[in-house]
Length: 281
Ligand code: SIN
Image 1 (cartoon, rainbow, N blue to C red):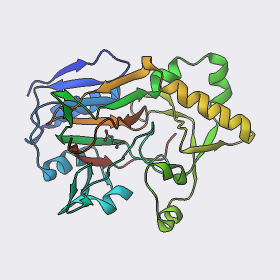
Image 2: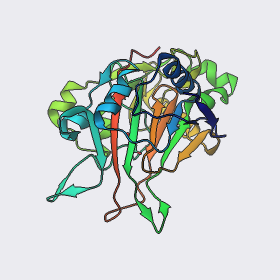
Image 3: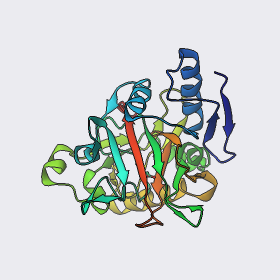
């Protein structure tokens, strides 16, 4: 299989062409895909036709699979590794998580070992007279770090922020048991990518509630300023989905948000898998 890797031209992202993910991948082909994933932060392949089992098998090539809170409520029957992301209802009940990731975030940053990455497979995409809706935006927190003034870099490097799960309240109401299972954690606000060694900012408005050693008011201002910096237009790639897209992002160097510009009868259905992660450094 001869892969073609076409950068999006934005600060991150590349399309991988000439690949069929329903077929087992040879080690060399997989190594090329993994390399592109580490380098570009977001990679995608169009026109895929894969089963839930094939998506799980592909995700496992990147290591352990992570199970997340959404999967406990909305997974594919017989495939607990797959979370259903959807606005569709059946018999009056949602078949998936509707408002996943509406605000800029990095997946499960409130855990001690945030996932390496996430994979979304698009099955149904909403549209308005042929215009696709429900895009996802991705921001390169690595390019954002590169663009920071040196003085600010040295002021924040080595600092750790508090990441608090209850910040997700706006996205979905967590149960008291879920809150207890996810106590606040601390991560470096400047992370180093474990494969490429690239540095990136790791700060989000909803999830970061403080910075160690910085007075609360000053920390709040810094969190907002850095979070806003990461999502400036020059660091963003906006993905316009087509059914059959399989897209994956790196949760260390990339933040993302789902654009909620559609509603029933416009249907959106995605299958999502999550890769296991490691303690951020
Ligand atoms: C997510 O944040 O995992 C969902 C992104 C999307 O549905 O576009």
